[in-house]
Length: 136
Image 1 (cartoon, rainbow, N blue to C red):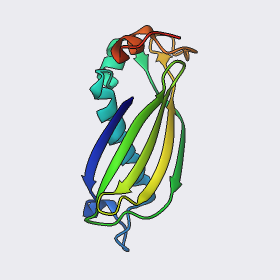
Image 2 (tube, rainbow, N blue to C red):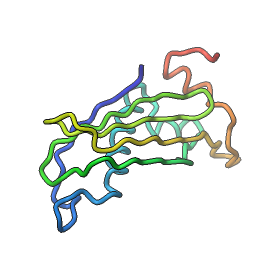
Image 3 (tube, one colour):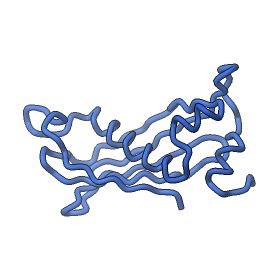
């Protein structure tokens, strides 16, 4: 329902001596796609902060299937799959030419009130408003 796709041409500065993307850069690619996803429903990080919340990542799981390489066009898909109590975003990174899956991942973010620094056990109302959905 809520997803974003981002195409990236792997830059030289993201690869090691073997011209393979260093594993930590996949997280950067996912962050870029996650930001694009959040902007689609106007709930990017500045909006979160303006509404009194931060959303730290509390869990990140990555499965490296195959390597991305210098100059390769890759697509990062970010899909919002949970939002009632936390943000769960699932990712798939593919080679644009072959559609081969290179990486699969999931990130979990929780809402934290800025003023009290307390974790919320339900997502704030503003998120539901931005998504255009009602609470279950």
